Length: 155
Length: 399
Image (cartoon, rainbow over all chains, first blue to last red; front, side, top):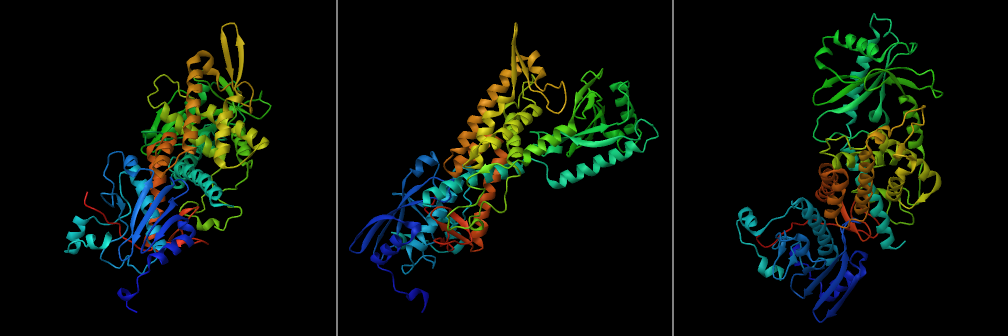
């Protein structure tokens, strides 16, 4: 089977997997073709516990929010690294590549990536350095010589 | 065990690991210690090959923090002190400290290698190895009046001998340091956990505390160095006072109590430090005593009786030390942990310890060895109930 041809998981399948994985144990609402899932994430026992919300509509990319604590308040006026804005969401993978595709389980991709993001976020809060790598669209343009496909992929 | 208590246990052992890691950045490396040892053995050899009958039997021995493993690098100075005793057995107390010191100095000066490094200090000779260490060589002779086999060393004015016992002190400290604390959650080992110890890296990596007593002494001394960085009045509590109080408190704590975690023991023993200080109230005020238990008549707090402000400075600093360690113990967030560890041991070792954690996560991530579990967060390798972290590239709106 070619990667791009795998069948997307339905919102219900994603929801059930999120509920079953101890890493993302939490609660949520499943409606027709979309869902909201909330769980506690903490990148280390020394870290804060963050309430994360994942929203997904069928045929769309999942959106990842940190509800509490307030990331902007923790950042104390500094621009958050590696987020989409308005509203603030975590940017966990490079759109338009095979890193995340609709047939992949959110509990095995988006969830561990959000924990990883939170590690580098706490590291960044104190050190001022984002040590998690990644690209911002401007660099991405230069590196890949093509526009980011964010709009279509990440809503 | 549920995930909350498992997480709480891991948290405690990781805090202890961070103290361990930070302390490793505070002390000389084993390479530096080896170099120092070669140098002072060479000095001992040179002294004892003298024609001077006084020096033939001389023996060079380590004393002080290097001897007992509690050294912390001084702030803003490249060299750390290696304290040595040049002990002459079979000698009569009739020799004056000034005379013995002079003869040792003459012998050192006769060596073309040592002569340019030599610096005279009030009670000792210093060999200055730039950017490495100072070897401070203090003369000593036997103390026939000491029931514990102690020695005599020059007083500050070099006029008379005063009682000391570096060998006995070291032996007593080492005996105490070997006392095993009773800790319920033995270091890094999880009871009832599905997660084996070696899977809860990035932290443990065979990191055992060098010994809680030694690490506690190092933390306390470092905190003292930070608090008294601008101390021009000699208010900073002496290392010998800190070390003695901590080692006695440690013996008391491990002999009487069982602790949930290493850090609980560290905080408790820090709290109990002042308990070994004796006071006498006389007509004019309070007299302070902290007796050297390995000889007769050496009061480590002697100076407090002439300078009561030093006693006040000790108690103020001690209160701040406990508060800072307790804040660190309660830190939440890697950023808070970094900041509050910095308040205890200084920015640079705290940054080094936290940067090492992130570097381990990043290395494991690159090598596809990173996974994540609910209680432990990111871990190296895998564990029951853990989810591997697949490769990803963080993205985002332009800043």
